[in-house]
Image 1 (tube, rainbow, N blue to C red):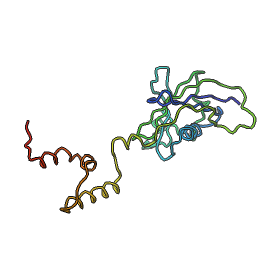
Image 2: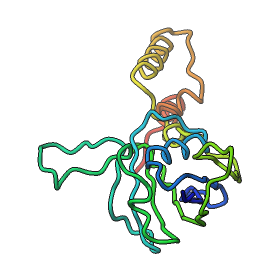
Image 3: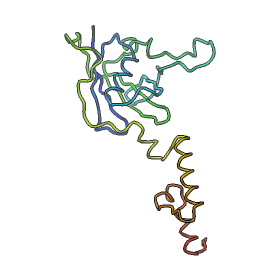
Image 4: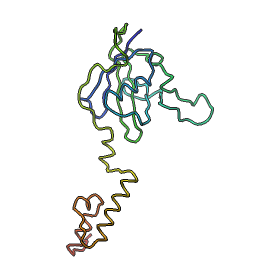
Length: 196
């Protein structure tokens, strides 16, 4: 039974990569889980693989769950759990694109770097055989844009209102900046009029 050796790298972080070995008869779901384990991401988000060419153009999609509506079989997408790697790998240098989390849009490039004719004795596949670089934080993009969930927003708003209604309560520069209030408050405090 053949074993595929894939190089897995982040599109935005070329110096961070993993090498994953997986049996040709295993599924895209097995590869999906192996990728997430190797980079330390949770498995809570949706994902898709796309078969690709040397120019990284996307072709056939293989999705975690089929979200298409209707009973038209020609519109149904193949799903990972029922799709074996050997049925899609047609090139000894096959490339694929893996998108994880359609909000964060983590894009991972996958290249087939080798095929071994026999599996190694005692190895449980899939297996990560090489790790280079620390993975970025999974939710770094959400944190960078300052997105918060409803509960966090309610708590921040309550704290802000409590301080603004209390004559003795002061709002720190960081809090004012967080709400986009810093410039307006400075202008009012200094008694300066806006000029255009």
